[in-house]
Length: 149
Image (cartoon, rainbow, N blue to C red; front, top):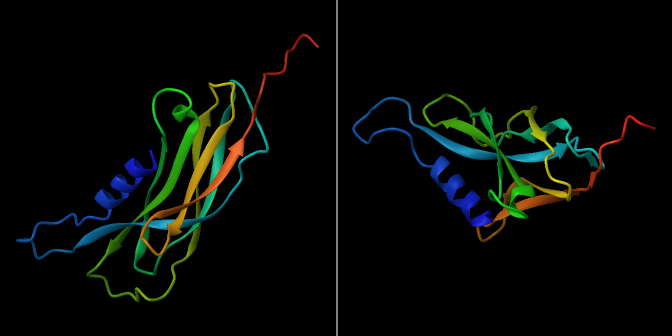
């Protein structure tokens, strides 16, 4: 799945304009995820809103979307959640691309429909070989509390 996520990132970083078009040239980049508020464990059947913190790559970047996707449709890949913050970079704007951008935070929701642990991979950057670096967090799942107690 990591290779699939890398391919998506490469696609997102591609230009979104025609070579015959003189209008603004927008490209896409990922922002470093700097934190999260994942709980220490999940309860089976519950839905959680997860807050993630990020820092924009430069003053020329703007938040575009959260890309949170599973590693696949069957187990165990279904419990592998890859999270990236996609930003848009307007190459024609009058901003300083050498100055780090602002901090931000966004949320996404997840329903826990499996009884085994979920593993989250938060994108934090690229290594010297342009391979993605992830912060990996494993969150165990507990059975739902019975109301008969």
